Amino acid sequence: MIYTTIKQMLPNLFSTKKRYHLFLLLCLNTALCFALVGYRMVHIGFDTSQVNDLNDLFYTRSTTFLFLVWNLLLAWAPYLISLPLNRLPSKWLALPVLAIWLMFLPNAPYIVTDLLHVHYRPPVPQWYDVLMIFSFAWTGLLLGFLSLLDVHGFLEKNLGKRQAGLLMGGIIVLCSFGVYLGRYQRWNTWDLLLEPYQLFWDMVAVLMHPFLNLGSLGLAAVMAGVLGVGYLTLRTLVSER
Image 1 (cartoon, one colour):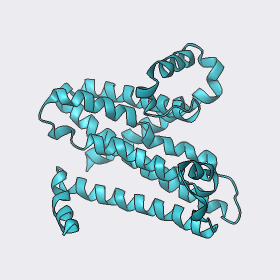
Image 2 (cartoon, one colour; image 1 turned 45 degrees about the vertical axis):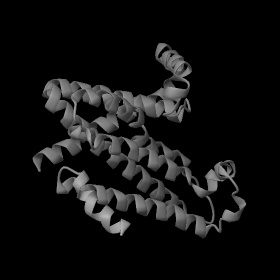
Image 3 (cartoon, helix red, strand yellow; image 1 turned 180 degrees about the vertical axis):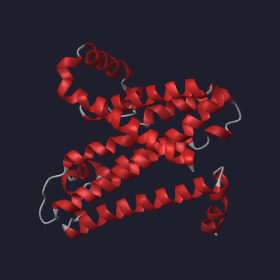
Image 4 (cartoon, one colour; image 1 turned 135 degrees about the vertical axis):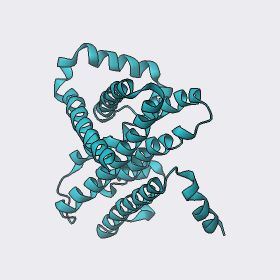
């Protein structure tokens, strides 16, 4: 009964049938990612009875790769937040929604940096871990790019094409810097609320002394280029369709 009700209501949450189909494909991608992690745990013979709480689970992250599941769930946040933008009853409500969306946006491309965890871990073949992490990263990028398309369309509708384009460029740069803060400074999204002052001064320190962090800060610059070109490519394909 509940399943039938959800199945009937779900398509009505999307403005077009294409958006609904994309949502289903993203769910399929996510299910595949989770299945790859699950199969890996079975293959290495991981004993779930050893896990009593979240702390135990954290210490097994290098063998279970369950951190990828959490990272992908966070990557869904900006996509889900951007979906109702064009259905808000007031444009002013879009401001807090966009602020929250921007907070969560770096979580989508962040998973690409999890490729740094690829090492040969017997008995799992290295190629399996590469493809597994790539699958998570690919799904995260799709969620991020589709989210950017939604926001770009909303900004063009309300601000104009030129202003929207400039804002999207700035958003991609901020998003890339957010990935750097997460990977090397180890800040999380919720730290914007829990420790805003410490986070702010860490950002100021990095920006005031960029050459001291050049080796790691390059991640933000390269990520901005990759995301920018990737987004423009996807947007061109969508507009031509």
